Amino acid sequence: MGFEVEGNGEQQVAILLNELLGTSEFGSLIDGELVAGNGDDVELINPATGQVFLTYRDAGEGIVAAAADAAVNAQKVWWSMTATARGQLMWKCGMEIRAAAESLARLECISAGKPIRDCRVEVAKVADMFAYYAGWCDKIMGQVIPIPTSHLNYTRHEPYGVVTQITPWNAPVFTGGWQIAPAICAGNAVLLKPSELTPLSSTVLAKLLEQAGIPRGLVNVINGLGHTTGTAAITHPATKKVVFVGSPQTGAVIASLSAQRVIPCVLELGGKSANIIFPDADLDRAVVGAQAAVFSAAGQSCVSGARLLVHRDIYKEVVERVASAARKLPVGLPWNESVMVGPINNQKQFNHVRSLVSDGIAEGAVVAAGGKPAEIGGGEHGYFYLPTVLANVKNNTRVAQEEIFGPVVSVISFSDEEEAVALANDSRFGLAGAVWTADVGRAHRMAAQINAGTFWVNSYKAINVMSPFGGFGESGYGRSSGYQGLLEYTQTKSVWIETAKNPAIQFGYSIQ
Ligand code: NAD
Image 1 (cartoon, rainbow, N blue to C red):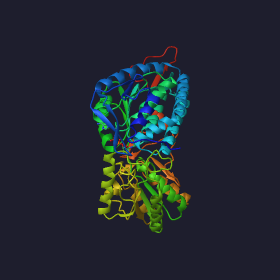
Image 2 (cartoon, rainbow, N blue to C red):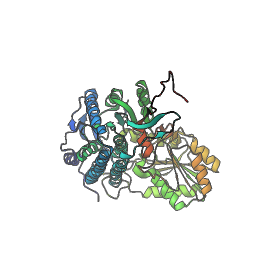
Image 3 (cartoon, rainbow, N blue to C red):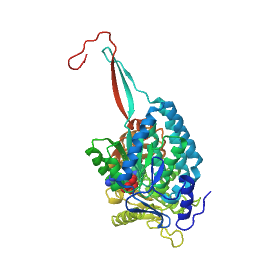
Image 4 (cartoon, helix red, strand yellow):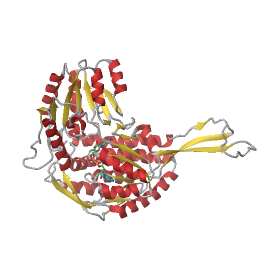
């Protein structure tokens, strides 16, 4: 069911915050308390109306320092518990999230502008993340290595201590859960800095975790701007690792800040993924897949299939079918149950989408559907853009090379498998990709040759907390989710124990 939101959503958000946080005075969540920031005002704008619905203050250095202190203390408590006890508490976290799911989904819907149906799915997935990593807590095991001396040598996977996580605005609660769950599973405490544009759901998530029983201060949410609050968290001595999800431009800054402190970082960045259709594919499914790949979340997804590569024999038919389907997609206010495409999250991103589309047209692309903002809400000024299909796109144009992060697909023609691979790989990114074909041999050949961290065959956007996720090329490095994502939050220690009765102490390395 959809729900009612009046005007800019201010009243509805206040009710939800009161229910979920116990107050509508918003700030950072430090050591279990909501604390007002010391910096400049930050305005939250409803993407569906373009109007401010809440103002809070940037956290700033002092609040980050308090969060770091709380995290250091809470981490000691957390790590001193048995792994089984930590796992049981993480399981409870999943249950607490499920109990608050509808309110949390509504809060996300209003503040991020995401259709309520998508928000419900994402919140449910966050609960699953905690359930999944609950199971890992007491299964993080080292190895005993059969070295050729009288030593017993074994490894331990230890936490870093405090990790800083910085996340973007496109899937705030999903990305928050996706990073918090493996971090605390491995025994770390967290400083999470969500996007300043969408901080509400992550803050509520941290509150729910505390209500489930994890130590106060284990997960702190510092709310504010990137160059002030975000930078303060990365440069704080307590931070021992940084995990960043966001744009490549900011990723480079984060990597450089981390390098100056000689601490590791994981970068989960953008993409321009190629979705490839061959003539032997089941076209009905491929066309639906092509729409889902790029129009869900109004294209504001890192794995969006923004480049649709279509064999020339079926090019005209596929363009017509995807365009016709795009024109029928329900675009509108995200809290309406039937809406599948909501607004773009913010004005800057909205302008970016418009600029890339007009550049594409100037460089020869033909608009087969959409190509302009959508009029929604009777005179409101939300950031709605029509699902757009651009045909005759050349792969070397700006619209085909730059991440668009909007509901726009560029359709590019190819003549054979070799050309499809070459076009798909002619991108600085390498986040995801897909092929639609009935030829199993070709499917495997494509999976092996496309430069991407995730590749789908006859599918798109399948994602699960159990499976590793991350980028090739400028889409980043390191992995999130699954066992590999868990290991990113641990550091390996090698322990040597002499077991001989009267061992000779070696002068120098004892290597045999
Ligand atoms: P962004 O890079 O502008 O911001 C991301 C975060 O970085 C925000 O919290 C921001 O406040 C913070 N930040 C900005 N400057 C900073 C600084 N100097 N120091 C510390 N922190 C700083 O990205 P965005 O516009 O919020 O999100 C969109 C981008 O995120 C897209 O490129 C998208 O592809 C990417 N993304 C990637 C994944 C993935 O897993 N690969 C997932 C979702 C989104």
